[in-house]
Length: 319
Image (cartoon, rainbow, N blue to C red; front, side, top):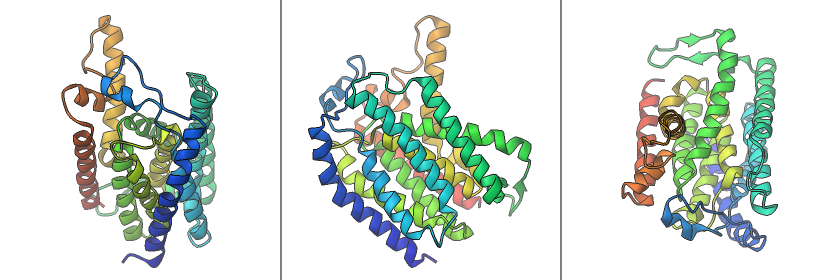
């Protein structure tokens, strides 16, 4: 049964997001925090140059304020909120260096990697001390069986967190794409948390509400982009929630879009290097390949969002 807290958190986060957006977007525009587009990329994206980015701040603020209202009664929100805010801060630093200080590369790859490792390590230490149940992985379609090999689950945390964060980051390439896909995932998490009494449903509902509010301004044609501030934060949220819900093994299913976006980049780069310049996809990540095949942004966003919704239903049937 859906509790009052879930409904309230969704509505509060949605309201904050909708109210903040018209205030934050002009502010970002005045700061000239605009997006830049590659001249060698999809040509239709060139008209997006100058669209305010760092809109992920709207999502972060909405989720933070709402989650803090319920964190006393729902302490299991703490590790998920930590990863969400932590990766959001890394994304903010990256965006700030790129679009405000005009340092084209943002954070250096080594700096970003070290920060991500530090955050993930703190997350692992916290759950080991405060909530070791998170490292018991539910085996789907087994009627309640778990995998408890800590020797494997701890190294797996790093792979899952870093892979998910980068997957969401690569997915954020079309108007409303990362927002729509992650909304479906957040709804799925909310249903699972309620059904399993996991205790993070106010935050997952808050993320749903914040994303729905943000989508009003991020849908095509987007008035604001979330930037790394938003995409890295959402990656942290997805990975953290998957562990608290004890379902990281299902990430390749409900997070299939994130996974294929990352794999398309890895495959493209590897094949390009091995063959001296040949490509498998017209462009990577995968959503750009579909664009160059003639699909519109709205078609791709709809397809990827529907696929995610259907795969979330598959995952629900296995729990």
